Length: 97
Image 1 (cartoon, rainbow, N blue to C red):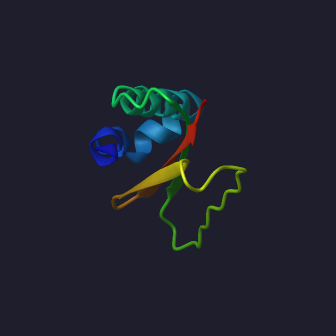
Image 2 (image 1 turned 90 degrees about the vertical axis):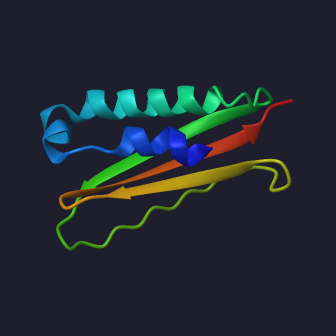
């Protein structure tokens, strides 16, 4: 389910990113969050984190720390890569009582 929400949004080209990265990131995170919310997990709150970079033979690592309940909270990731860039999306789902 999550893959169908993110794959279409992460299919980008480098010219789009270089033209206006701030607006692009905001648009991407909002669209992905709306898509995940449409899956109707009403008791969860979502945090969407999108990272996009240019492929130039560099090393890249992402790490996160959260205070959460490992029994009911979770996360999902999706990666995209083409000839010029990579994109990683992480959606954190935190149960809300």
